[in-house]
Amino acid sequence: MKTKFFFLCVTLCFLLPTEVSFAQEDCDPITTFPWHEGFEDNDTILPSCWTHKIWGNDPDWVWTVAPYSTGIPNTAQEGNYKVRSYYNDSSVHLNSSMLITPVLDLSALNKPMLVYWHTQKDKGSLRVYYRNNTTEEWKTYLQTFTSGNILDWQGEVVLLPDKSAHYQIGFESVFTGSGTAEIQLDNIRVMEFDNFVDVEVVKIITPNSGHNLTNNEPVKVLLKNNGSDPLTELTLKLELDGALITTETLTGSIPSLEQVEHIFATTVNLFAEGTYQIKVTAIAENDYISSNNSKTINVTNIFCPKITSFPWHEGFEDNGANIPKCWTLVGSSDGDHYWYIVPDTIGTPPTAHDGSFKARILL
Ligand SMILES: [Ca+2]
Ligand SMILES: [Ca+2]
Ligand SMILES: [Ca+2]
Image (cartoon, rainbow, N blue to C red; front, top):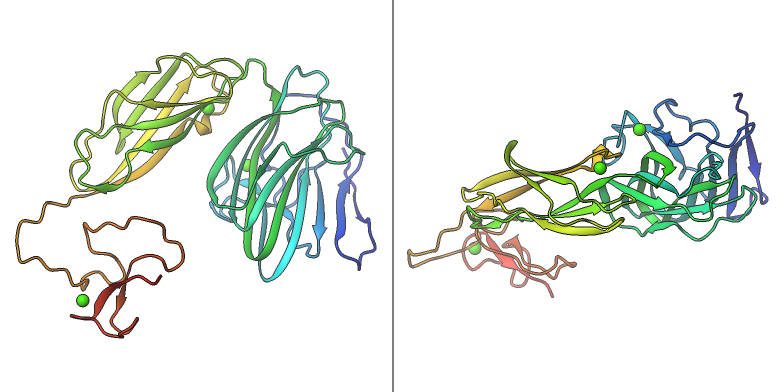
C-alpha cells in the first residue's frame, strides 16, 4: 500500500494553539485480529496508517519511534523499538500530542479489547481515548494516568466500548509546565477478549528492606487476572538469588479483571546481612502475555545488634550525608522537613558540638 503524507494547519498557523496533523491516506481498516504493533519496522517514522496530532505551541513534543536504548527505562517492552514523546525545556508549555491507531474494523469481534504497555516520567501524563468513527470527536478517556513516574513497563488491558467498523484509539501525551517529560509506548494489541488468558504479577508486597530481617520472612504478592474467565489453574514459583525456593498452586480463583494477594506458604531466609533478589513467577496455561508473568525486587537486610556497650556515642561523623547505620528515618522527605546529616558550617549556630558533622531538621 502506497502511503502519502500531508500537512494540515486547522487553525491559522500563527495562532495558538495550533492543531497539526500528519495524516496518511489510502489505508483500509484493519480486519485481522489479534492485531499487533511493536514499532519494529520503521526505524524513526511511525508505522504506515498511524496518524499524529499536536495541540499546543511546540511541535517538539511529538511521538517518534525510538530505539530501545533511548529514554527511561532504556529498554523496549518487546523487540528493539518503541514510541516516545519527550520534552526538556525550562519555559512553561502546555502541549499535547496524540498518536492515533489505524482505523480498526471491530465489527467481527464479540468483545474487543486493547492491550498495551507504557511508561511515564516527570511532568508527562497519558490519556487514552477512542472514537467509533474517524470524523467524530474523541470520546471520554478509556484510561488516564496523571503525572507521576512509571519507570518500569506497565501493561494495561482495556475493554473497548461502542465497537464499530471505523474505530480508532488515540494515545495522548500531555505536558504541562516546564522541565522534562517523557511518555513511552510499546506492544499495542487489539484482540478478542473472549477466551483471553493472562495472569500478571503486579508487585511483590513483602518482604521490604530493613533492619534485622529474619530467617522466616513471608513473601506476599499481588496477582491480577487480566483474562475473560476466572483463573483457577495457577502455578506460582518463588526464587531467591536465582535458586528455586518453592512452587505452589494457587488455592481459590481470581475472578476476571480482579486482583488478589497471595502469601507463599514457604518463607525466605534473609537473616544474614546483605542484598537479596526475590523473584515471583505466575504460570497459567495459554497465557497470552508472558512478559508480565514475573516481578523481581531487591531486598537489603542490615544487621543491627542491640547496643550493650556504654558509654555509647553518636556524633554523625562517619557517613557524610548518610544517616548512621542502624538509625531509622520515619516520615516523608517533604521538602526540608526531614533529618539530614550536614557539615558544621550549615545551620544556626554554624558549628557542630563535636567534630565536623551534625544532624539537622529545618521546619
Ligand atoms: Ca517494540
Ligand atoms: Ca501473563
Ligand atoms: Ca558531630
